[in-house]
Image (cartoon, rainbow, N blue to C red; front, side, top):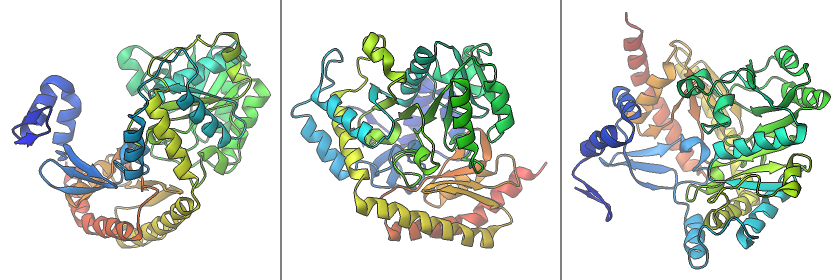
Length: 426
C-alpha cells in the first residue's frame, strides 16, 4: 500500500493501470514498452526514488526544472515562509512579489526592460510572439526545423510537424522553419521583409543539443536587424547558468530583443515563467497593459521562489561549481568514448548542457536510456533525434555524485551494447 494521505494506491501496477485509464494512455504505454516502468515517489536533491524503492540519479531534471535539485531545502523554506503572507495574488494590481522578481530578472538580463509573467514556458513564448507582432506590425514567425517552443496556441506552431499537424496547428502562411546552422536558408526566409520574429533556442534541446556553428547566432541576429525582425531567445533549457552564464545568449555574445525563461525559474516547486521584453517589444504595456491577461501568470508564491532562484544563481560558489562540473563532465566523457567508442560516438557540450551521440542505431539513445535506468541513472533521449541522449547535470552536483554518475555510466555500457545489438537484429 502506498499511502500519500490524500490518496492511496495498492501497488505501482495500479498506478500504471489507472494512468492508462484516466491520464495518458499512449505516454504510459510507451514507457512500459521501452522497459522503463518509472513512477516517481520520494525525491530529494539529484536523486529520485521509484515507488518500488529503486534510487536513481536524475540527469533529466525535467528539462532543467530541477536545476537546483528536487525539493531544494533553501527553496522549500522560501516557499513555506511565503505561504505565511502570499497566495496567487491578483493580476490586476501592482504586487510586491511580482515587482521584486521583475526587477531581479531585468537586472541580470542586459538589454531587457520589462518582465511579463506566465505559468509555463509555452505561454511565455506566446507572449513573446505577440509582443514581436505588436512591435513590428508583421505576422510571420521563423523558427528552426526540429525546434521546440511549447504546446500552446502560438508556440506549438513554431515546432516540429509531430506537434503541429495532430492539432491542425500547422500554419505555413504565418510560420516557417529553416534548418539549424544554415545561414543561407535563414537569409532566404528573412529577405522578404515580412518576418516579425525569429525564435530560436541558443542550443536546440529537443533536437539533441546540436551546437551552433561559429558566428551562426551572430549572423542570425544581424539578419534580424537588417530585415526589421525581432530576435527571440528561448532560454527555457539553456538559461539559468546551464551554459556557464546566466543566459545562453550571453555566452555567444548576442543581444536578443525578447527572451523567455521558465522551468528552472520555478525551482521545481511553483510554476512560473517570464517573457522579458526590450523597450520596443514592450510598447504594448504602455498602450494597453491588459492586452494580455493571465490569472496565474506571476503567481506571487512562484515569484517569491523565483526571486530566490535568481539570487542563488549569482552566488560565486555556485558559479564556480558549474565550472567544476563542466570540466569534470568534459574529461569524463572523453574517457568514456575511449572505452566505449564502438557505441558512444560523440559529445555536444556547452557548460552543463550535453548531448551524447549513440549513432549506430536510429534510436540508439532510447536503448542507452534504458540501460542507464537499469543501473540507477535517469537520462532521457532527445524526442526529435533519438540517436542523442540528453545529459543534464545539476548546477549543485558534488564531486562525489559526479564520480558516482560516471561509474554507473561505465557499468551500464555492456547492457547498452546488448540492447543495441538486439534492436539491430532483423
